[in-house]
Every structure is written in structure tokens, then in C-alpha cells.
Image (cartoon, rainbow, N blue to C red; front, side, top):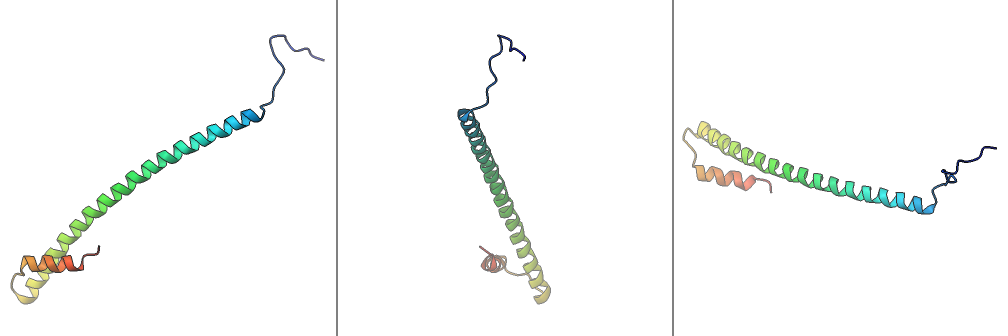
Length: 94
């Protein structure tokens, strides 16, 4: 039988307190990751909303231009810009 060197203590297995500590550390890491992901999700949703708003502005402008061109093509005279804007605004989704 081998003798253990005096500088080494007996081998120890991690007890319940070690398991609790690891579980607490894992929980803390999970919470930190959730917070980080929530912040990234909020930023992404904000960017999507801003992009959507800009796109809708562009669509509205294109719709006014197209409606005005169609009106002029059919009736042979320019359309009232305010009337076109009101008509486009009336069908704009909210």
C-alpha cells in the first residue's frame, strides 16, 4: 500500500455545498445572459420599428406620386396635391 505524502491531504469529493455553489453560479450566469439577450432584443426591435417607419414614409411618398401620375394620365390634368395626400392618408394602415 502506498503512503500518501505528508504535504497532500486526503482526497475529497465535492459535497452538497459545492453543488449548491455551482448551481448558484450557473443561475447567476443564466440571469446575466438573459439580461444581455433582453437588451439585444430590445435594441433589435427598436431598429426594426425605426426601419418600418422609414419604409412607410417612403411608401406614402411613392403612393402620392403614383396616384398623382395616374390621375393626370387618365384625366389629362394635374391632380390637387392636397386631395391626393388626403386620399393616400385615408387608406394608410395604422
